[in-house]
Length: 412
Image (cartoon, rainbow, N blue to C red; front, side, top):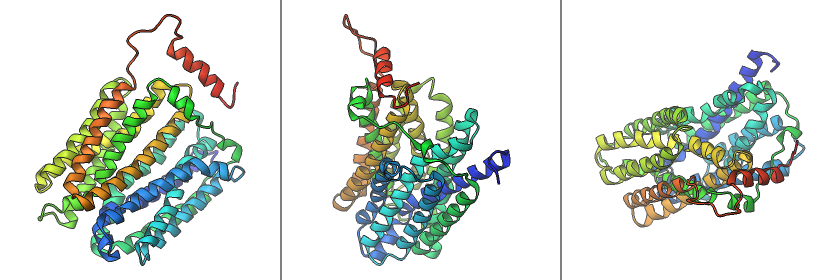
């Protein structure tokens, strides 16, 4: 089917949606299956929780190096292979006899996830109407939200009925189907379309507001994953919370995330400063409520959707913030933001696992809330204007414009 027609483009976008759905579902299955996985493998909750951090670490490596390692490869072929690799990785996890095998499979999955997100925009840009790139990417990104709303809670429910290993086998089948769909509907993409500007750390540091902003993103992301990775153990503080009840709670988080993404996306351009405070503050407040009132199901049922609404707007917040502080270098600064996000995911889940094992899950949640508070303090500082400008100083916009031109690898 040719992508020169509307139906062809729709089929290609549907295939990329399916790839996004399958990969993100695979990435975040462990939090909902954590207790069963730990018991079966004879490991602690904290040790199995490292599987989320391992995936994020590998995703960082895949996103930042895949294009450089394979500069001449057809991008459609790469993304097809990555979906197939994800299928194999899920199958390895499903039959893992020991924790180290499971972690190995999760590392391989992470490379596939990171590689997919590094190539998705390039592939969409190759066939989508230039005036509708954003709308086309919205379809692909919808796979992420659908995974959060339906895929992960469904995986948790199936884990209760079938066991955690069949759930990962089903994820493998879904990834394999996505690979076939991408290969059948997405057009070949010449490697020249995949060129991207390199990130210069010195340019990031020099940019006004970048350091407090990126540190703030790291704090709220690490806080979120330090808590969310261990959501199953905290829900089990309430003796009346069944496995199906936990699945409902995770579904509420996903619904809240979808609602937050839509609502915040509509308002954030006009209220960025307010959201830089409100989003991490809401994450902190809701996580703290779960920590303190985790034994009371009604409080959890209210706090978790609020948490979802807040974190559902984080990616939109970061993208809007990047466009605001570095309008001429969106690609490179967005890459820096992705790198920070992935590393914070690793550090958050890993440190959370240590705290859960040593001090307990409620202490972990309290510390996670504290990290989100740090984010609420740092992020607003990233867009504060200097109180005064010394004589002879060049206005920031002009400095940035000059640096942007110097950094542009494709000058007009």
